[in-house]
Length: 103
Image (cartoon, rainbow, N blue to C red; front, side):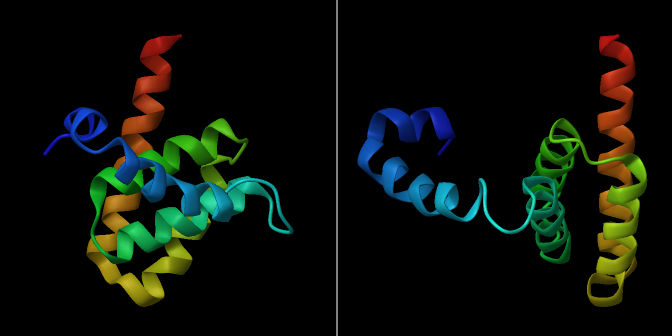
């Protein structure tokens, strides 16, 4: 089921689904871009390529540099291994290419 189908079929589910995410994200002790880097790493360890790219994009939109994303990915490699690292690098390259085309 696609997300837009969930909007129609179960809007109350979506409200419950997104509420805790908004609590964990947003302002707190950790800067938001670091939370996005953590979420990128968690998605990479779980081999979730869509989430990795989404969090790379959001981290960059929040001011994370290419170097910060790479360092977070390299640190994550200790747990996630090569496939997870490659996923992060691929996502970063795609986001950078999209940004270059948009200019």
